[in-house]
Image (cartoon, rainbow over all chains, first blue to last red; front, top):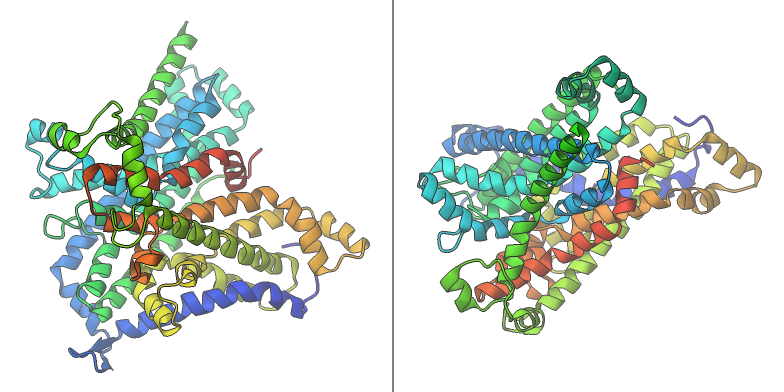
Length: 292
Length: 273
């Protein structure tokens, strides 16, 4: 905290009021309603609702579709994190290696970050359509690819669509991380260790740990929430709900099924998952990595 | 010699990476300049055709052609209003809130800090229906206000500004106080000019964030007059080349902003040289 500050006065509330006001009305009020929805059940005709304790939660635990969505979300975030992280790191290391054109490469690789997931999904759609999709036909030749029916193939479809643009974000952050490592550390390590491959994994990579863990969180958040636009424009959950993320399922149950109680309960489950990931990040990861 | 080989290897890898990014977009663009019958017969194209003006102008300007009532031009206008609104509203409120948190000796500072920052854990997707019913109760469905404000209810920029203010040396406030500046003058005359890079970076970040919204506009607009570009992807009908053209145009504004203002964006977000 600052040593020099202004004394507490009414003017501080004027500075806080706009943001607090917006958060209270458009964030806290809906959150409170989410909790209310989660613990009540609408009657079939929409005339009233009654308090049902944890019934909505019990229903989602009984629902096999919930576990399918849960399984898919975990696999999806894990694979996306792994793919985009490793390709992003590979590209960042190469860009950091070259003597000339570093900033040109940065410009040429940064822009996919700005594309909306829904736009990516629509484009992926064109490459995976049965009619003229190049990737569809390539994979079909190779092993009879058919995402309309095969769960594995539909995973491949949404994983490619989901990873493509996220490589860019991983690249930017890893490159920034690499550039922040002090030259002297790298030079010293070059004297001690001639093998550049080993040097990378024993010196550089450990120094990138803060960036890596930050990106893991960013990628998981992306796979959980931002991929809605991708799923909704590619498989729409096909085949039979196997590629629905938890967010997508909650939305569909609330919107199509008009089951706000279940949607609310599913949202609260998601909040708990996000909370656990965040606490895990603060407790275990922040404490165990070394910042230089 | 080894130096040359390793560096050629790096260039090769980077080139492959760039191709993976560019080729899909190029193919959709090239295909968007052909006629629909050409695409339907021969699939996606690698080379340009000669229907560029025809296809793009039709999508941009024809009312009742591509969508029912709205032209793509109007959708770009709506997206621009929404993204600019989100950027300005969230950056201004975040600047002010972060200022109060860092520069005031507030009694319940920790509590306020948590009230603001815990919201980062609850993205709009998790409270989408209740947010909709709040908007319906406030009569804000089908309005620019309804598109903008719930997206602006975000504390991400506050977090960045707070981190930035904490790195500002204490001497700045001391000397400002000697000059007789009050809290408002210090904020406007000293701190804001100093945070310029950070402010631009956050404006870019929130603009792209607002422009790329998909689910919320889909839910909160039932009237075509408020449709935005990205949600429009879900509503597209019409022939395949017109869809290609619309998809191509939809990604231009955010990409342009990121490339042109790249320097500010990277400087602000990574706070490096």
